[in-house]
Length: 225
Ligand SMILES: Nc1ncnc2c1ncn2[C@@H]1O[C@H](COP(=O)(O)OP(=O)(O)O)[C@@H](O)[C@H]1O
Ligand SMILES: [Mg+2]
Image (cartoon, rainbow, N blue to C red):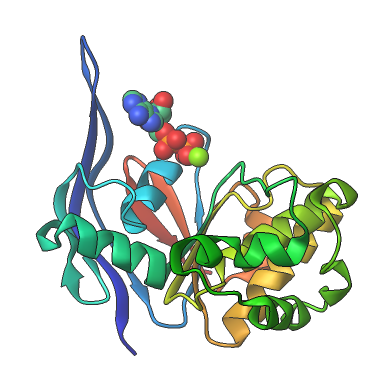
């Protein structure tokens, strides 16, 4: 099994006018092919900061971050965008759909814009994978919060990325919808997708993911049961 992400001695500091905020310090961590990892930590502990670094959205840090074997700090900016587009699917904490387009279009839109290719069939197949193909023609306003989040998840899956990263994907959902989204993630992991999420919900993390890490003292510690 290959390493999708390898982080060695990561330190992340936000420089403020009067002080330096140390958010992560000497953090080391690996994501292996096929993992489903939940990162748990209180608000402000640095989960989003870490996910952004893993997803190549932030490259201002000290330490080494390897993605799929490449040292990220040595990649040119255009190469980095390429990896981000092709190999990483990201679901943001407050992700939103394009209100003027139906579900299918929302899923295929990023590639329609970037590559000018229609991928209606692929988008439909993704919906079928989660048994929500009946949502295909609906507009975002017709969807529940949970359904919107599930569509955002599939939009992140559009390029069949090597790694799917979701920042508190159930954060704004009621327990029932949160369960649906978590079981979607498990379904995707069962078919081989490597997944890392941040979450507050330890019970669901235990129920659905394979490994749990706590972000505490600026480092990750694995929860062993
Ligand atoms: N761009 C930034 N500049 C300065 N401080 C930031 C920035 N982004 C986040 N922080 C601070 O870093 C800490 C960790 O934030 P974050 O990674 O968003 O935590 P979490 O996702 O666990 O809630 C917080 O104290 C936050 O205020
Ligand atoms: Mg966050």
